[in-house]
Image (cartoon, rainbow, N blue to C red):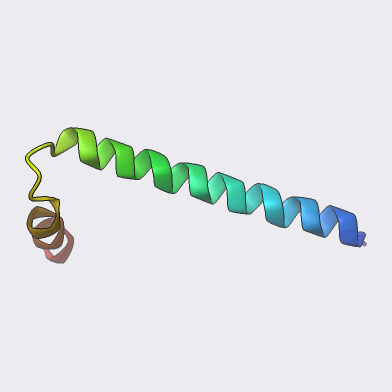
Length: 48
């Protein structure tokens, strides 16, 4: 079984990876849509 240290390390690594992935996605969206109306276009593309 896992020790507490292993579980803590895995949770920390997963949290960091998720944060990095979300940050990269946000950067890509910002670069691909530099018009400034990201809220309207984001909702339109998200609902479609």
